[in-house]
Image (cartoon, rainbow, N blue to C red; front, side, top):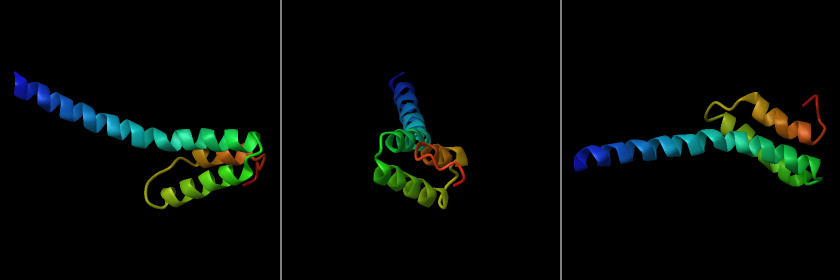
Length: 77
């Protein structure tokens, strides 16, 4: 019984890290939007840059990046 529980715990840990990694881009998009709306342009642009670099390595939805641009009121970017 103990071995079965440890296997489940390891699986849960992998799932949790996948969720954290997967939602980091979502969170960054919203943060970029908030930074842009609050006048923190440098922070918003830094998040945009990070998301664009990350998109070269793995799939990032374009809407995540667009969200940060929207916060800067740059609708054509």
